[in-house]
Image 1 (spheres, helix red, strand yellow):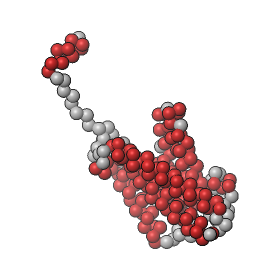
Image 2 (cartoon, one colour):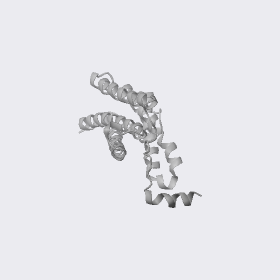
Image 3 (cartoon, rainbow, N blue to C red):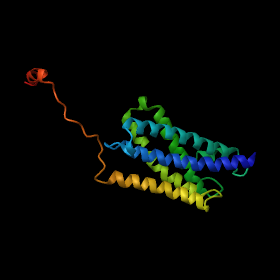
Image 4 (tube, one colour):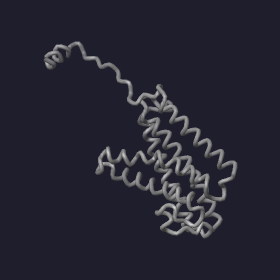
Length: 197
């Protein structure tokens, strides 16, 4: 049973990183006025939200399995307070910091209608900080930190985010959709001119 917890903890952490990469890339794509990934904007937003929910589920699985795994020997406060662990405290602390940031994003997203858009958006920007923290945590801790497959996945995730950021900063990125010129029916033009006087 303990081996199953250990393998699940490792796998769920990697899956969470991949999903978080997708979330950040889609979040950048959703801000564009052009259809990102040849998908309509509503589809990008829906995929972004669902991938984020799935990332949170896998992150919760990662954390809970490590809490009950006798090899990891994590204490409850180490899951909340960063950089206090006994095993690789900096790298483990980055994981705790990423978890705390994710909790803040989830809680404010659930309270979005009560907080208002500005407050929610300010906290939501933490997702951009959450991604590199999660990447560094995965590369610096755990027994797989030297494995070629983990580095391949991590470099692929870094490449995706780098490409999304380069696209975001390029002149080809437009923030708002191009609006079509509105035409007024001929029979309504006299009424429109009357109103504008």
